[in-house]
Length: 164
Image (cartoon, rainbow, N blue to C red; front, side, top):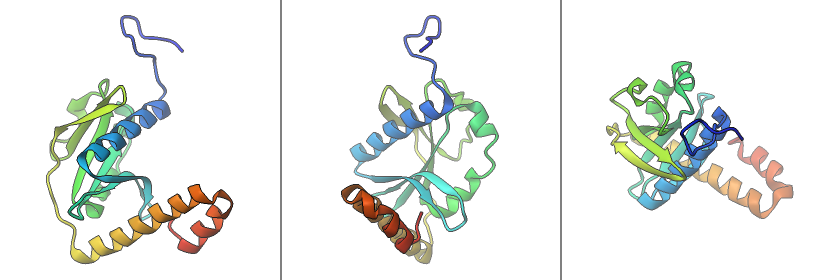
């Protein structure tokens, strides 16, 4: 793989960057005591990159951006606020952070680790939405876990749960 001149890090494609940032953000969630689930489909047809359940029952959404163009062409991220108590962007060190809005939290990933550079403002979910989201989260996570235990039955379970 090619390397940038003067940089010890290889050039990565946007999907490779996304995967690395997702993994680092997931590890950060674990260190914070949050339980992350990746690629969570919402009733609106949108999909959250990461939805993490916090110990107090709160939900944090993490939208991963691989590059400036990824952010600039994404008009849907505003809709994610309706499905979480806190919203973060997660990016790598090469991302131009000045592009990101100040009213969203910021997580920066580097070499498999991540840190919160800016906390996310809280906007608590209404109780009915929280309950609906908690059920969706639990069913999705359980379905994925069962799929790991029984790959042959995974498709049948997903169809029965109708969450993916």
